[in-house]
Image 1: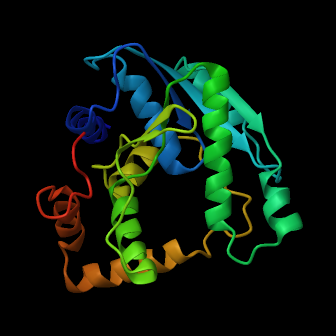
Image 2: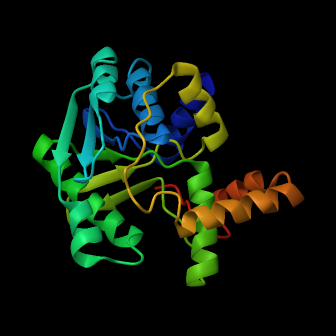
Image 3: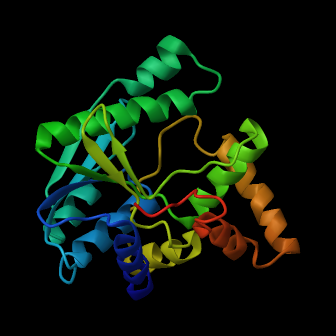
Length: 238
């Protein structure tokens, strides 16, 4: 956990993620990444240079089984309010639209539901559990399927909602997050999404794993490329 908190502190310093008086909603999907972020941000309140409020926010997409009782218990233990927003996103995507490539639409609808709920709760920041590996995989996805150099930014102001989206774990590796989740026995909830594990992102993850077998430090080099502000500007510090 010490290493993860160090990554969050560095990202906060580099990208000015959290300001004094912020109310930060953590998007908690039930997966390992969002639970690790929630737990880490609860601890980070103790020594962060800026004081902030924290809310755990879970979208219920309308698909069962999705038992959130263990997450509610965790939130009680770490003294973070837990809010569940019920939606019909799953029904719209899989039953009405029957989209063969549902991930992009699902992400857009989830982001809209999350930011709308942030406004309802009086929050000004939305924290997501994307980590270093996610950023690198997004870069490869963009290159291979869109023909451009692009990845998500650690901090993005969403002008339509007025919410600032932050990703405090952009310097943290997935390998370390897995270790933290196992060490703390965080209550991971399996995703009921039918597309889970069968996406283009999963394919790119496998490609990157293959590359790392040939070039063991490939992930570190990709991180350096993301941080090369002068040459690429992908993660220019705001």
